[in-house]
Length: 185
Image 1 (cartoon, rainbow, N blue to C red):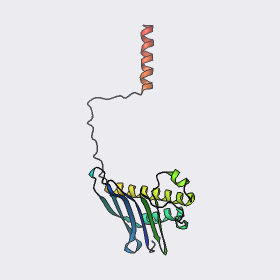
Image 2: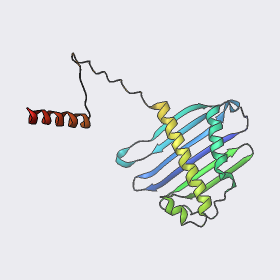
Image 3: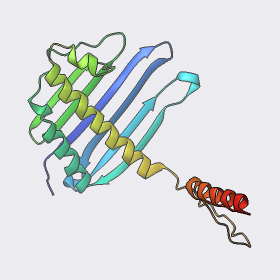
Image 4: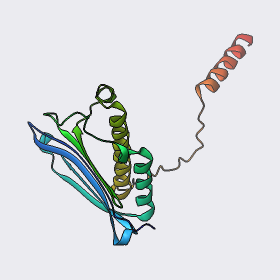
């Protein structure tokens, strides 16, 4: 287990006709690095939706995996000075602290990879884009694992007789055989 300080936070949001809408999550090591707390918030005022907040604890293994994802992405070598500035469409922020390294990025919302390739620093922004996609997928998976109610098992009563299922190919063969028998008889 690593006792180095660890923190990652992602924010994406804008203010529009439905007010301040955002998605934010952070993962911060707690209890001497043996586990971490994950916090998630999603605010969408569209159709009077309300703020969604989730919080959970994850193990050291998950912390180590997130650190590995971050280090493998090489985001700590990037600089956001040539990235698109925040605008009316909103902004994204990514803040990472691993041990003594601390870095913070801010850029405009990225709609697609076209926005990445047309930027002044396509390689750096591509690293940011894919890392954010990976982190979001991981957090959404954790939320799904922690908070979804398991499905109710579907119980189908056993019929009192045997049911045979045929594929279309089998039915086709049977039908041809029956036609041949009718023609011969």
